[in-house]
Length: 265
Image 1 (tube, one colour):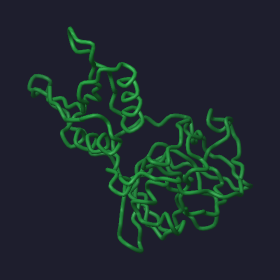
Image 2 (tube, helix red, strand yellow; image 1 turned 90 degrees about the vertical axis):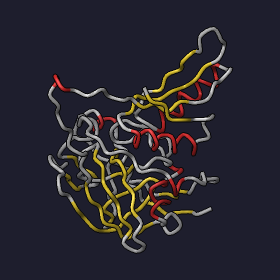
Image 3 (cartoon, one colour; image 1 turned 120 degrees about the horizontal axis):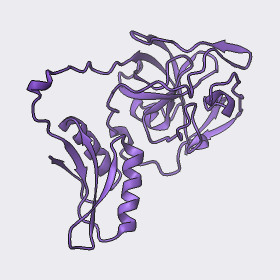
């Protein structure tokens, strides 16, 4: 097991900052760990799909102060690029609230940044090996030395530096693709995509699958009862493209969901 020294200036904000009040983060010294039995599929985890999200107050208070330093959240991150060292955080913080109130999931592709709006999407490139991944900013930090971003454990695995703790990286903001508007009179028929499991005979099992879908995707999961039978399927969607559906299908397979497949409507 890899043990990593950290002074994760805990991008996880105090309650006052989350709700928009002036507050400070508390620096915490300690030891962080890799998970004891990390999933084998992490290095193949699909990048999150970049899409526009509403910027909420939670996590975006500006300016804010940490350990005597004051930071300003960027009002517009278009074109943002930086280079420096990345670190990662893992088991020590798994399940704890992040700056915007979400729960930190070390197996999701997320990150903490001092100044980028929450949420934002960035491509992180390991300058030592050329590997890259996209992560979603949902936390604040790091506030230590020359580190420019604090990545989830999953992101560190994809960039192949989870054993050493830090890596030289380039961080580039990724914008959602522009949405085109169509003339309502000529709107085409839209195909909707879902990821659906095989038939389940246990409602509790269906509920458990629903919770997994909720953790791995923004797509809305639902339990569908099969008419005249005491059996169920769980589907997540709708998704607007087959690419999105196939990414979610890959995640469903990685999380051992029962018999997932893409369906069209």
